[in-house]
Picture 1 (tube, one colour):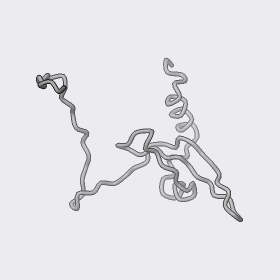
Picture 2 (cartoon, helix red, strand yellow):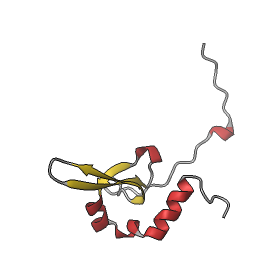
Picture 3 (cartoon, one colour):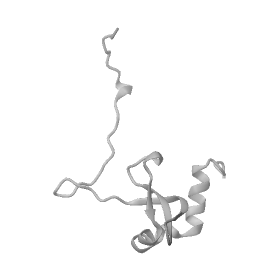
Length: 96
């Protein structure tokens, strides 16, 4: 049975600010690389990276070709920055 909703000021959600283009689209921007994998096809290997995108959750991360991501977003492959972010996502070194 449904009950009548009673408004509560703490139930308000603040919307995220997203810059929209004139055609009401927005530019996806990768935040970091979460994982790496090599897919074996019939006669070649393809290196893939799991990319976390801005304005998306970790569960929505996508697998992208590593070569493409290195070309478009070389800053993602700075090993010191990425290893720190990965360890934070895993819950390591949270207090340092």
